[in-house]
Image (tube, rainbow over all chains, first blue to last red; front, side):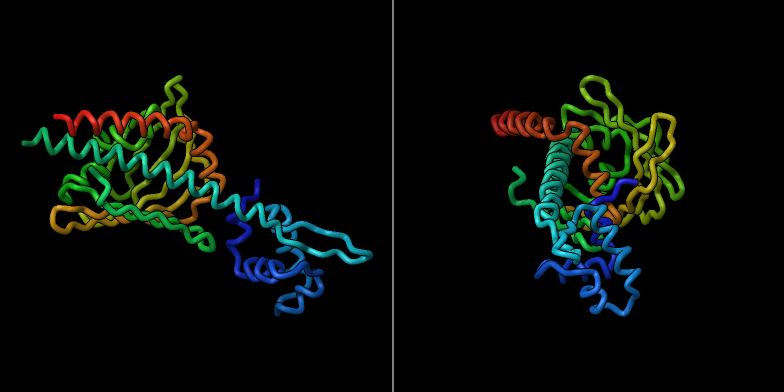
Length: 106
Length: 166
């Protein structure tokens, strides 16, 4: 199943991870210190976030840092604007239908 | 004509919930019909030049509307709406999924809730959509609606001009 951006933000731990790495890139170990869960659990969330292309890995020496993909977050807004547009048009069409029905009733 | 009517569209990305509020210049019973009767629904739910075609609609709890959005080239995109709760002229809820032409749903879908209220002859419709995914939104846009928008805005402008000249 293809991952989407909404899946990335659907989980509280993943939202916390996004908030943390939005400030600065972090290693999985540094991230794990902020949570009560196991290191494995944090790794699993990082894997999902990577699959959603919300975060990207960066190798610095022997360490792996996770960094936020800001552009991907912006994509959500782009799609939502188009979705809003669909509704706007449907409702304008409904306005016309309603006024036609009202006229025919008179 | 409709510039004074409310239209709010907000999204809670975290909970994947879309909130839509819109007012209509008509009494509640008419607006309720426009959302719950297939012959009226088919007149407005598809952004032109697409059109909506309801194969069948059984508006009761557990009942369904099985319908397609049809492109000008005749391409059909089917969907199923299954009604999970109905309080006449007040509220209804449904589960919405894309489907193939043989009515096999493409899960998961999203949960839709509609609320209706009237004040001074203006009816407000509030829609809450839960668990809408980016995939589903993408699919709607892929349907070619983007091009359709421009055309339907032009259509509407022409129509409004005709109406105001009369």
